[in-house]
Amino acid sequence: MSDIPPIRIGLGHDTHQLASGGPMMLGGVQINCDWHLVGHSDADVLLHAITDAVLGAAGLGDIGTLFPNTADENANRCSREMLSLAYTKVRNAGWKITNLDCVIFATQPKISPFRDSMIQSIQETMNLETGQVFLKGKTGENVGPVGRSEAIMAECIVLLHKAD
Image (cartoon, rainbow, N blue to C red; front, side, top):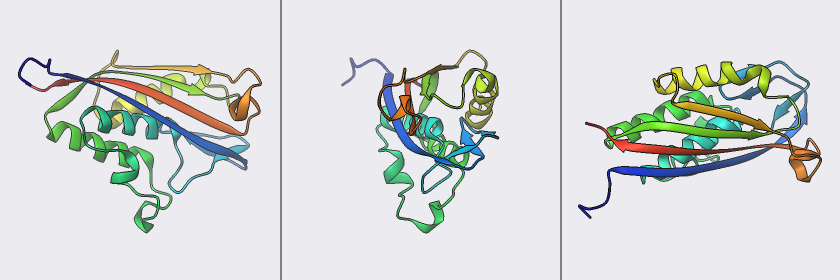
């Protein structure tokens, strides 16, 4: 094991159904629009994907293990709080983020007007610096549940390194 480099890669993914009536939480930002994401917590697909990526990279399970959707205390829970608690566990295990690269797949709302606010929210939640969080928005090109505006999906890949 000693010749394994002190880096880890994690992949996170989440999908939530869209429903009428806003607002929507996405990337830790409240978006005032005509839709919301359906879920047990605030259903923030991007923060859920990030949470899964960092927990998985550190070998600490996943969001469903740490915050089960069967637990009353997680009903309507803020995903920023869940991400912060998960990343604290990751840091306590001796890992730090090198960078996050994320993609939100959504037909609506458009991601570009909110991208900078989402990046800032993630940086603040995880105490990261400029240049450690990257975010792209993609549409479903009229294909599948994302393309038909039935769902929003997010994916995140993270690179962790051992803390000094």
